[in-house]
Image (cartoon, rainbow, N blue to C red; front, top):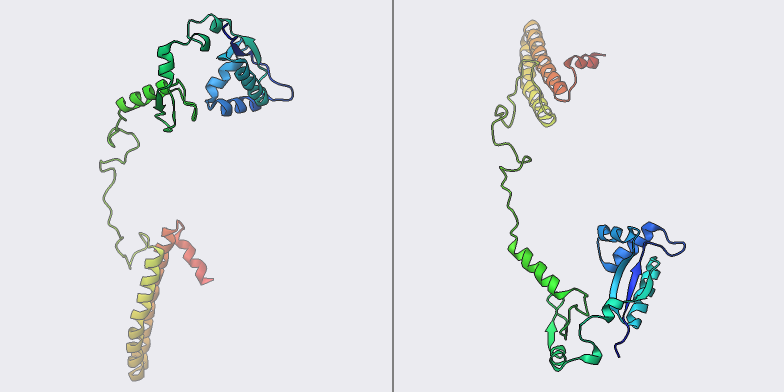
Length: 248
C-alpha cells in the first residue's frame, strides 16, 4: 500500500509573540532566499511551501518553520498520493539500478547516489547546471571609457597652465604658495646681508653716502617683502590690505 504523503501549508499567519520582520528574516535565513520571494509568502492566500513529504519529513519541516515564526500546518498531499511517480512499493528494476549509480555534486563535489538535490549543499543539480551554462554564454559587456558619462573629458576645457607660477617680485598681482613664500623670503634675507655690508663699508668712509645706501637698500628690501606678503595673502583668499595689520 502506498504510504501517505504530506505537504506544508502557510497562509501568512505568525506564531505568538513573533513580529513580521523577525519572521521574514528567519525565513530568508532558513531558505537562503532573497526578501522578494519571502514577501510573496505573506500575500494572504494558502501557499504550499513543501510538498510530497513523508510524515517524518513533514514533522521536521513543521518544527523548523514554527521555530522561525511561521504558523504553518501539515496536510495530506492528495495530489502526491495520486502521482504516477514510482514509490518504494513499486520500484522497477531499472529505477533500482539507477539509484545505485553514484554522482558528484557540481557545486560542492559531494559523492552521493543519483538524486535531484545534493544532500550536502541542498542545490537542485539540474537548475545549478543550467544556471552555470547561462552564465558561461553571457559575456560581460565592456563599457569603453568614451561611452560612460563619468569619464575624464579629453577636450581642452581650459588653458594649459605651467606647473609653477612665475615669481613677480615687484607687483601685488598674483599669488605665491606657502613653501615658495618661505623659500623666497629666506633668499631675500640672505641677499640683503651683503648689500647692508657694502652700505656699512661706505658708511665708514662717508656717513652721508653710507646712510643713503642704507636707506635705499632698506626700502628695496621692504618693498619686495611687501609684494611677497600681499601675494601670499592672495593665495589664502584674503585681501592684501590685511598686511597693514603688521604695522600696528
